Image (cartoon, rainbow, N blue to C red):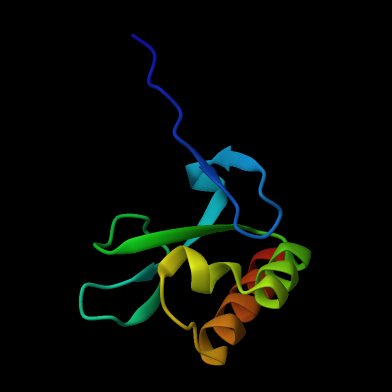
Amino acid sequence: MEKKTVKRRCVGCRESFDKRQLIRVIRTPEGKIELDLTGKSNGRGAYLCRNAECLKKARKKRSLNSSLNVSVPDEIYDKLEKELNEIES
C-alpha cells in the first residue's frame, strides 16, 4: 500500500506543497514562537515554502500572525531569513 503524501499550504504564496518541503513555524502551548525543523513539535503550526520571496510576502501581509493567532516577533522572521539563506547556499 502506498503512503499518502501530506500537503500543506504556504502562508506566503498560498500554494500547496508536500509537508516535507516546507518550514514549520509553531506557537507552543506556552505561547512561544519557534521554528520547528522536525515538523513534529506540539503547537499550532503555520508553513512557509523555502523561498525568500514567500517569506517577504508573509512578513508584509502578516500571514504568520493570522495563522498562529499571535503577533510574531521580528526575531522569528530574522531566524527564518537566516534559515532560508543557509538552505539556498
